[in-house]
Amino acid sequence: MKSQYRTIVIGAGVVGASVLYHLAKFGWSDVALIEREVLTAGSSWHAAGGFHALNADPNIRSARALPWRLSIAMRPVSIRS
Image (spheres, rainbow, N blue to C red):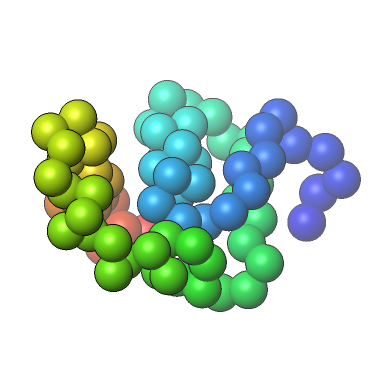
């Protein structure tokens, strides 16, 4: 672990992982992702039961679709790594 980074993303949930992915995609290599325990141990995992209630609003539904599309796009990247 280094003592200094350009950016530190706190939380490896849906938003944190997406932010880190996009930073890396834009060429940022001096970044760190900090999670308190293991992946899927945070609030994204605990909020999974609220999917249907949040999905009723078209704006929320659209925002929630982005991580799904990114996970599909990231599969070839994660397989190569």
